[in-house]
Image (cartoon, rainbow, N blue to C red; front, side, top):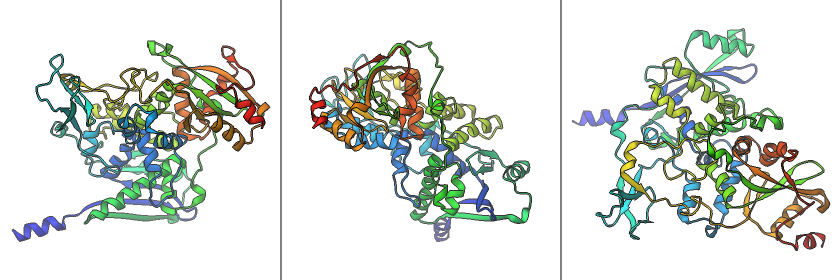
Length: 491
């Protein structure tokens, strides 16, 4: 009996990574890895953008990085007064969005973000029903139809219905390239990668093995730190594994510069009526360099951009057809699809879930103009879910109110004093500003989303094409709601 206990304590889980590096150029050629590491990489695809923005700012061996403009958007929600949101729950939903496929995520051997068991809350009156369905919410203390609180906790016990553990097959081993292409482990693959990087002399290749053993709780924190490092680097670098091994600052932020036209979505599926639901915003641009300074928008547009934080990364890549301009993340997404055809993904059903993970239930926006998936399991139909968001608009923001959204997606309530201070800080002359009114539909919304992933000039890169569109209404040189702005700026 004692021997069994000792054996149990000494049982060790281990993640082993074998890095093949070109020692002459200090460059990682590829890494050999097993199921656990590749499962962790593919789990990036089910992370909501808000979760990634939060992890990018987290402490690890790599300094905090900016996740395009989404870091600013996330911070804006954090800084926004609760009086501007429908309730406290709305802020919680945006700052800690739920991971879709959460039951799959909890079955991963290792995960890098806190994953609490999925729970729901039902009415304190256990006999309460409406239309023969129980009122429930995934968020505590919402008001039931009967006006009592939903505060009785229950757990979603569905893990037993999920046979898969992770995403790739247990017997598979993989080669992961420096830019996060995941390939089946074959001799030809490794040789091709060496030749691709101009390595012909095998004597210039070093092997470095990183073994992380799970003997204590500190193992998990060490593994999490390593993977967060790689996640951060994949957002700002096209060589994240080299950066991870050598920690060379010059590699960080080495994404290729992009032309504005690469952010523009030119064609969309117009079969849905949602395409006709356009939001009106007022855009102010600096004439001398054509930079969009900020736009004025109502709560419908603010709900729209806030909803980005709830989108799973894989769902975003699906909407952008695999071209997000985050080159390493695009490679990860395409690899998952190609590995499925090679039989390395556990099931076709799981591949479909990873390809377009839906927004978790209760996070969907009622007037969402983007084609993000919102499919749910049939067993939810026995419940009536009480939405924490606005019963009027179905959004997070308490309107009507006008907001300012800057080029890098900082969102604040409109204030003439704040606008004057912003223009002064940007060193913009009063006569160097022009204004136009534009309409934001699905095409424009996808362009904003795409630009927000990689640039801190989201509005300039995504809306500059619209500026010259003859259908836009041109306004005066500057027109802010507060009539006193010109006088304040002049003084």
